[in-house]
Image 1: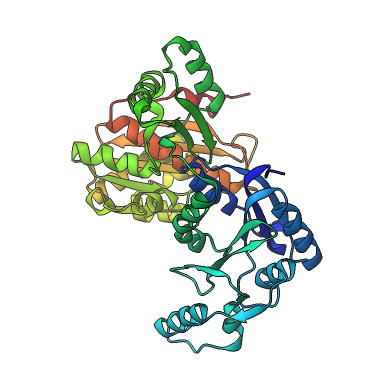
Image 2: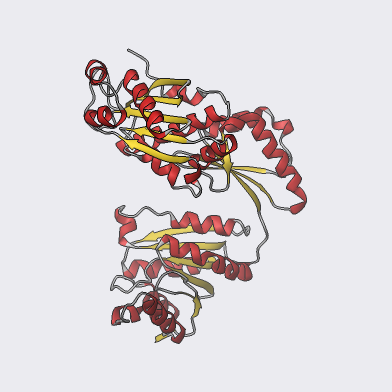
Length: 428
């Protein structure tokens, strides 16, 4: 009987079942395989229970050409993957010479002694092939189990990512593969349904052979334009041009571009610099800006003035203004912006002050209220928004809006985009 799916995933670990760790590795694996037109048809997540793991592996090997096991390769007692595979495959565990060599070199580079716990990671099913791990101590391995190719990977995301090119090559050799020609566009401030509706209205103009896909995230939305033949690359370019026509001011970049990089490109294009004056976001906006390589060309200084005293002493916000209007107010953020621009000498800036919660709100200024001021000395404005949700979500959204609003001003795009309407404060 032919296999029903090309690839199945078996994710292991009590931390996944308890919610202590959020599974992002299955997405990494699926995206990497998708670029080779290889599909993941089934996924099972199981805690560190030997019987459940064994039953799951047997079931997946019966229904997939390839099974990728993620997790359980470490040095501790609950790392059961090698032992489990050996038992199901009817093989013995042996010390793999190349795995031992990898461990010795890994320990030597870090000035560590190779101990018995680490050596556990070299006990692999007899006849297994190594899958190189260029970062971590635990090598992966590949072996045949009941007619399926089983490939093991560590649970640490950065290690898995480094191993995926070799894993994809192995799987492509096993199941056959093509090439998916994918262009990824990063957007902000517009949702999937809105984009799809706009595209549907221009359905006659959408080039044939181009598939539009979405990958939601916070705060950005990724679009994927895919064609399965190199002859269709011009069609993909046409689809991208149409998207720029429909939602161009929301497209911030390609591949893994973030809002801060989009702002940086805009500032470099105009030879401008930026500063930040933050209260409720606690320096997140500045952190996002400086996280990008090359940020020193556009960012010299930022200010985190959380208390009223700091707003007064650092940025020069008049004490009378703070007393009369409160920290979360238009006059205060405008004064914060003015102070930051003067002290930094920057061309443009952003100032935010709000109530992130979960406490601290009032009838007049409920949790989620934020005042934002942005612009240059000679051209700036302020707006009051209401951002619902958790404290973390509040900070992420406020920081993202701040970056995007500055990007829009630098590029002379509509200064108050339509997405702001859902955050506009409206008095009861």
